[in-house]
Length: 640
Ligand SMILES: Cc1ncc(COP(=O)(O)O)c(C=O)c1O
Image 1 (spheres, rainbow, N blue to C red):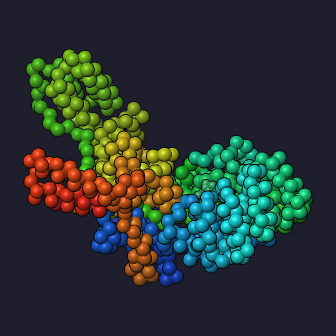
Image 2 (spheres, protein in one colour; image 1 turned 30 degrees about the horizontal axis):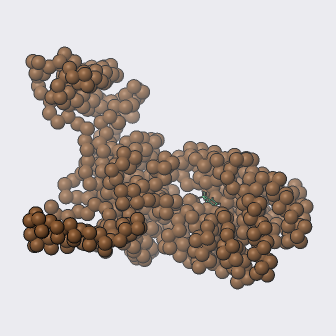
């Protein structure tokens, strides 16, 4: 499509380009002044706060970029929406049971998140889900009085004992049995403590869901009981006169399920299990459907693995209606619906901001007016195409220039073309590509053969962050997150770029971007202004990224702040956490930073002895080394 003129570019054009009004889901937008903003609903109307203002407030408090921001209001809004949408669906469908949400802590276990889930979720009896002993302890210390505690995963003796005592304390703590071997252990510890357990059985259903996590469902999924194992476990509990303990049926369909029809099929199958067990006298009360509620990362409401073709209200209505329809056929009482939505609860509330440190441009450095007399005929031919670039056929010119470049490189490898000639030829190719690209932008319909042209000219913007620490899923599973500049949005973004991080790893890059026109290997960005920070924001990244992140190249946790936005557009910085220092990161790898200083001191002493440095230099170096251990791991802007 022909591009809009640079001079008439507005913030609304940027909003359209980056698709913020689609994936932002009403939480994010762009002001006429060109700043990305967060919007929070209040009874008196929407309140908007520009994101650059929040970044500045963090910097004023000493938290340099990269920075992770948590917005408490957005987390609260998701908890409210999930609970209230289920209440509405229950009313609308005439469902006779109720809803109890739980938050699976593995999705983001950070204390600021868990404390807010507990505080705000109390009004909805929002519970927690634990998948390990450490998570169980976290849940026991943070559970709402009336919230459910769902225990998935492997359970050792201590785990089981703690869960049993939680029941004695009055919590509803369910052990979800995922393999037949778990039951004897639970029964033994329960007899020992004299406390009857609350038991859930996790089933494997055969309905398979689409999306990135399709293997979580179906016969070969890793977790859950086969139908035969389920029946054997039920019979065993009946024989032991402990069937009353079995009150919950659990089924996790998958994560980020894009298609509502897949959810409906899974819920129908799970409901059939529930109906038949209830009919044969199992006193079930809860049907736990696990996670799966998707986030529309690309904002196009489709069956794409990064999207979803339903709204939250459709999801809730589909679940209530499907359970009701299935159970009514067997006149079975409707259960309490439980869901373990993680991603949809926390994704929106966290953002990452990072600054750009440098740019590599793919453009010619200098072009001679005339080709040197000794130039190889292929180089001379490239110069001719360059001079004619205004008139050559776009596709034919680009194809020939590429072929010539390849042949020139081949001749260079064979020693038949000099390094200087190759340098001239590379410059010429970039100049030709640039000219043709300007003409391509004017086309209404772009020929498929030119699709690589823009990409071959794209800049590389170097960002002050680590993909492996802050966005591990983008590297590990190709997860895309919306990314865009958070300021200068009323200026035309004249550059196209991919983004590289600070690690010395070629995988440390972002080259799949979400634009309203569709997925793109490059992101439209602005040229850097000397001495000014250029800041990009990564949105919807609150789920799974923080704990999965690692220390590749020893880049540690970034600075973090939590804010609460007030109805007068002010905001309070409610929590702040300084990122890892180099000493802290080294200590995580079992080094002793004090011993580091000693080791360095010994080296300096030797250098003094051999006359390489004097004692004043030794003193300065030692204090620099010691100060550096206390620094953060990311790039620090300082006067040179
Ligand atoms: C048992 C269980 N419950 C809940 C979740 C959370 O899923 P989601 O983030 O899709 O809501 C998961 C994650 O895969 C899970 O394994």
